[in-house]
Length: 436
Ligand code: GDP
Ligand code: GDP
Image (cartoon, rainbow, N blue to C red):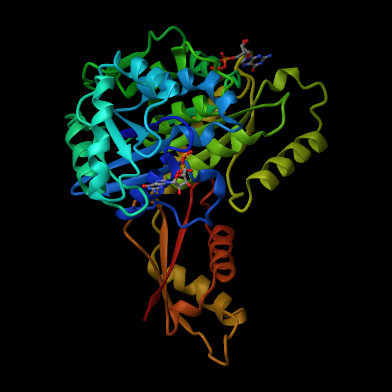
């Protein structure tokens, strides 16, 4: 299971600089998808043999300092609920402020490990200044400089030393792990209730620790599946659920632990930035995707034209990844609930589909011959061979004489051709161009 580290602190202490530093030091960035700025608050870090996700909770707070003051409690509370380790960043240059004191007093109440990060210690003489932060009662301040990187190695060591040990999991069944995600009030809990009723159908809980169990195994409608982190969804938080970062933070763990994500949209509302944030988390983690347009019972006109318009609008907003199933459901009346599970099963199977090499080459080489990669600077690019790699996410390697010259649009063309000939609906595909 994955681990989550949250960065908290008042504005301008260097949270986002630290976030960038930590994700780039040894950053194993998951997806190759064109970098969208809205993802800058979430990334993955590998350090030694451990991997964790890191979130800059401040990245979701927009507006001025006084707007922030009202939000700070919520930001910290979310971190205390969701994170495994909390980084509390303060500023050696600016010293302690009232806002810092407020955060510290909240953090003193959590049982989770809190690391007190004294940032902007650009040189050793400034390390002395960190002593003032002992007053928080949160242990030894760790002087670092997010700008020049000093102290970040020690910080990473400290982070991984506080990550919970990996739990022993029972041998999992070959069954999809499903995360139901979406913004507050989209109908996630209702869908789960529609699936499992009053939880009478729980088969087993995968051995959890003292913390919430992550997967629950169900056997319903003749299908085996796991629901990921339903407790987290059902437990309504103390904090304002409409806050964007709240639902996004809640989603991270569920998405990371899933094979297939069901993204719930509300038919009575358009796609908003929260939906896009959650969608991009699914993409970044290369998970399977089904979009459910919920509350379909509330839509009066359900003609084919209306359905087509809905579908087109959704795909346009989520482009360039558009090859996924869209199902119009009502969690309330249970309309097409079964279809959701059926489709989950199919996406799960498509994710592990293997195309035989001879078949791939028979189909793809003539297409490549008819539409080769555009020549650059008088150099002709020849792709001679393609094979699927033995990876968890469908990945295809095309072997070429000049791989570095094959650009993004052509890779997308290759991906679309693969999707046109084999059904990979709902699953991401990676395209690699390799030296022959
Ligand atoms: P955030 O609001 O907490 O995310 O803070 P930012 O990361 O945006 O940083 C606020 C300001 O502090 C920027 O001007 C940064 O360049 C500066 N800053 C961040 N880290 C350091 C550091 O280690 N040393 C110095 N001298 N400045 C820093
Ligand atoms: P969550 O916050 O995503 O878990 O959303 P809930 O499942 O709590 O649903 C939020 C509200 O929408 C509740 O009042 C539900 O009764 C209502 N709701 C959920 N699904 C549907 C649906 O398919 N049709 C209608 N009409 N209402 C729904």
